[in-house]
Picture 1 (cartoon, rainbow, N blue to C red):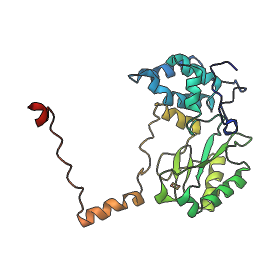
Picture 2: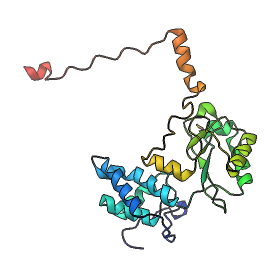
Picture 3: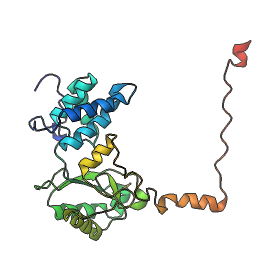
Length: 249
Ligand code: FES
């Protein structure tokens, strides 16, 4: 390992797997990484979408992807690794074709999130942070998805699956395993995780407006406010610019 590579102080939390040097990154990928970098006034700001592109190509944050991002941005591989290992959306081992998340934070747990996690683990035969041997599914335990009004919530490839039950979870996994078309409850049709990663990198697939996005539960308060005639208080007048009275003397 060279002196520029990032080493975690918490090795059990998992660092980028430097022993797996396989990669699909080619000249086309490098050109697309440059395109992303060129979208930002400061190229370094492009690192997050660039890492999503790496995941779309390699199925994880690969050593080659880290080096490519560093070379395009003119920063060190340690700086890239430090970002890639900070955020949970960046995977250090290959994710499955469908990346499944189960929320087990407080509200979802109260509504059955832990039971869902048990059902999914048993159904897929894998635990948290693992990928099935055939590469079809990977599994993650999620912190609150900010979708508590639809608890318990799962997600597949970052799309919401709301108001889940053990039976719905089982049916969902069966449908995905069979290659059937599955619609997110508040988003686009579920395609592969890598395709979704490409969208997050800033290469739209034209499906962003599929689905209702905001569900009725999320808009309940808005409806009540309209019924009651409630309005937001007027914004305070902006402070006058220019010198204060004191300064003007
Ligand atoms: S606790 Fe699961 S979405 Fe908030």
